Image (cartoon, rainbow, N blue to C red):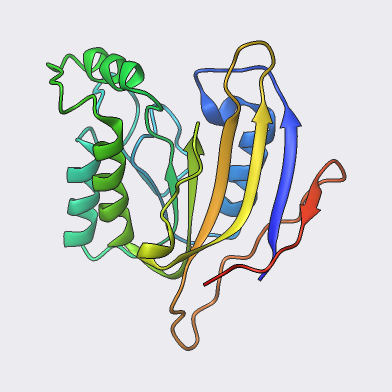
Length: 200
């Protein structure tokens, strides 16, 4: 298994997918997906199922991300692509809740716990061979503990004192017979491919 790697420069934006290389990264996978889910969608209507806790957004649902994903599981939704673009820091979590008119607790701002709970809920709706795209300032992702393999990493530098945005694509293992995987999209001429063996 080889991992695709690329690095780009683009100006920062609060709308992650509005950053040109990141938008292209997401659309490349969406083009090959049948059922997609975005639990932190804001006003994006790119996915089949969209959610944002802020009722002022145009998302289809306005729940806590974990509750939204649990509802999809109860409805037996099976996704072959999930977009995981949560608030990246405790400050952003606080701003996200306050924008929705919600009271923020100390536990709410512990982004590590939030990420773990939401990733666990994501895993329950991703079909074998499905893809999860994760965005943030770290590259933890779904991880091998949940039986995901890294297939692509993209770094987007923003200049100055801004953190890079790290974009990763992971595929869920244990492919069922007859299931079609979502493949890595073709990368542009600026991309650098780094091939390495994954240690299992």
